[in-house]
Image (cartoon, rainbow, N blue to C red):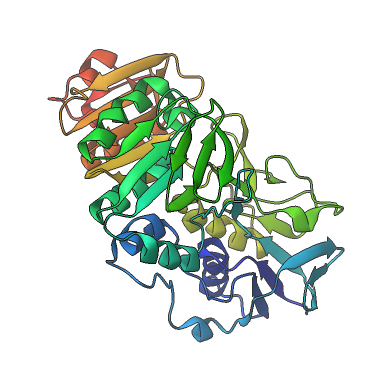
Length: 391
C-alpha cells in the first residue's frame, strides 16, 4: 500500500493527519511541506508574534507520535496518476490531500516589499519595527489593520494605503468598513484611501496619482492567491483554487483538497466558495479524513473568522453576499456593536465588535436556517437567540 500523501504542512495538513489517526487509520502517511518548519499557526503572526508576545507558533511538539514521514523543504511540482513529484523526489499514493494554502500577492516595483505569510517573515519584520521607524502598509484589509495595530503599539510611524473607499471594502462592504476609519486615527495611524499604488520603490511607495509615501519598511497586504501552480497540466479542475465538491473531492478520484487552496461546493449557499479562514483549515480536514477512509461526509459550514485590531475584537460569521436587509444592534460610535445581514427574514451573516455572545448566538441561528424578527434583532436589549421566529 502506498498510503496517504498530504501536500502542505500547515494547519490543514496537520489536521488531516490527526483525523486519519483518530479514525483508526494505521497505514503510511507522508507529509510534504515547502517550508523548513513543521506545522505552525499563522493567525498569531500579525498579532502576538508581531507584538512580541510570541516567538513560536508551532502546533504540535510530538509530531512523531502520529507516525508520519515528514518531508520538509520540498515543493510539489507535478501531479500525475497516483504519483506526486516534488523538487526532490517522487511519491506514489493511494489517496492524496492537497492543503498547500495560498501565496501573497506582490506589487510591481524593484524596491523591497515584505509580506506576512511565514513565521520567518514575521520575525524579520518585527525586528524592523522599532520606535520611530516609518512603515507603509499597502492594503487596509484584515492583515493590514492588524499589522498597523501592532506597529503603532511598537512606536512606529505607520501609513496605510488603500485603493478602495474604505478599509475592508471587499470583505464586509463600504458601509460597514467605513465605520473602522476612525479606529486608524485613534491609534495614530495615517490612512490614505482611494490611493492606488504605481510601484514599490527603494525608499517607499509611488502612488498612481503622482504622490510618494516615503518609508523605511514597506509591507504588501493586498491578498493571496491559492498555491496551485503544481497542478497545472494535471486532471485536477481549478476554479478559484482547487475545485472540490461538497465532500471535498477533486475531479480526480482519491484526490482531496481543503483549506485556503480549495473552493468547495456549498449546498447552503448554492455555489462554489473559498475562504482563507483558520476555521476552515481546522474543520474541513475532518471531512477529508472521513472520506479518504471510505465515508461520504459533507462539508457545508457557516464561515467564521475573527480579527484583533485597534483594541477591538471583531468577529464575523456567515456570508452576506446577496443579503437584502441590514440590521444594526447598538451604535457603531460605541465600543460594542453588531450588524446583521438578512435575506428576507432569514439571518445569513453577522459581524460583532466586542460582543462574542451575540456572535455565538447568531452562528447557531444561521446554522439552523432560522428566521428572525428584524425589530427584535435590532434591539440590543434582546438576546440574538430571542429574535428567532417560527418559519
